[in-house]
Length: 211
Image (cartoon, one colour):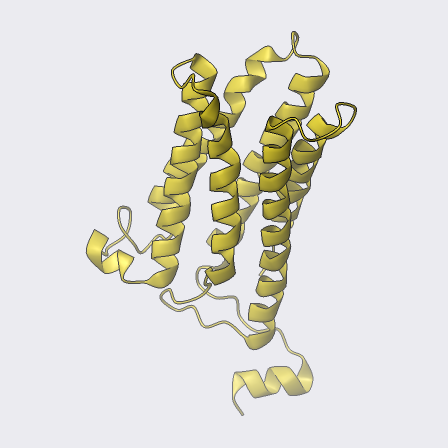
């Protein structure tokens, strides 16, 4: 009897795909970074003089996470794996991971430039919500599986999909509320806390990610 049929009949646990531990770790690491960004934003608003140095946390965390994902998002792909760059990018999942890493690097670079005063134009403040929205929407077509030895069960794929739907919704909420905050369209009393609170929530969800 095929393993999948035995699973449906007797509810036995299927063996984990080869890339599952690394995938879960990468999501958890991303969650920790996102959580750090949200908490830092809240602390900066509550006590700006005391926590002013935390303004460097956002860009440096984004740059660090982007650099990590470029190298280690897929261990069999370029630059850490045995596949070359062109061959790696032929895989849709690898290509999406590299694009996400580039988005993080761009976001981090822009936020760092704003923090140190290089990007002084007021228009640069919209880069973060725009790129955050692009990243959230790109999750709609994000694929799992496809690596060596990775064959996911239908229920597992559905569970991953449900989690990513939550990420899309919350990520879009972060982008919209951050833009509204920067435009001064949210009430002063609670407006500055909306997008950081959603960021904290997204970070927690990512840290609870499971396949």
